[in-house]
Image (cartoon, rainbow, N blue to C red; front, side, top):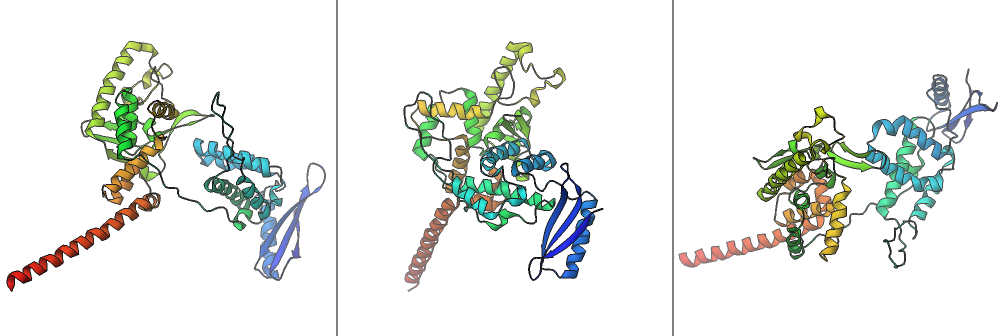
Length: 417
């Protein structure tokens, strides 16, 4: 049976200490918990509840595990059950740096000062590893992590510690007591009208599948993963619409898999231009010819009962298997280099779509809905510089309106005089 005691730590602060048997080395197992803002009688009640939780097995006996050990414990008991493959892969990438700096420390010994030192270290030049281009003689650039990336490390640590507090492995969350770098919103640089014209002109000589990728990203405002998640069943080529309801993502552990869209608002039905529809119709005919030519080699890994054209991906490899989402980036890098165009990523077409719509005075709610943002405020925050410019133009519009009204009134007065 567990036994407990109380130590007074301050005017209204008490440390609860509970012994509950021996560990594998014969040492006494002790659980501690600090409670604040209560009286001595209330501390006695908290101790009784603490003992009850320990005897019921609600208090894990692993408070002395290292942060690395706890991370594995957290994955097994929480992340693996609640996070998607892409989130788990991203967390693994972030934890690589966390493990190197803090992984060896005991979970219950990590203090706010250690986190501050860690964030300071992440901001130092040379932390970011930049791969040198093949056969390049240029010196390796020395870069530091952005404030946004450092903040993402903080968010993961805070998430880990929150669960540790919830599971009674920690008395408080040390990440709550430090301030990470503030998130910054960088202005999205997009092609101007002349650059876009040169891009589209060069695009005319490319394969039809790449034309469609660009059209869906630019005219539709689709994310890259949404484009590669599209199946033929999502299109209504008579009504010129496409339904977005899934995304194709890649991780080293899972390969390319389908998942739900980013949020509920990302599930949307959008209109696409007639020119895009015509390209898709032509592309569909070409795909049908390839299917017939390859016969049994087409989608060879797909069970016979599942080989339906409707559930086939829009973009595939030579034999009908789902295409890798990164193939868009690979083609685009080659394309802009061959045509001496400014650097651009697939995601920037999405920003172009929003930029051109806002510049054309499209309603912000319409733009937000097309992009699949959960809230209009998200769109406004990202494109605030454009909205400010549009708002400034309204002042000139109103001024012109008032001047015209004044001139009209004067003209009428002269006629009446």
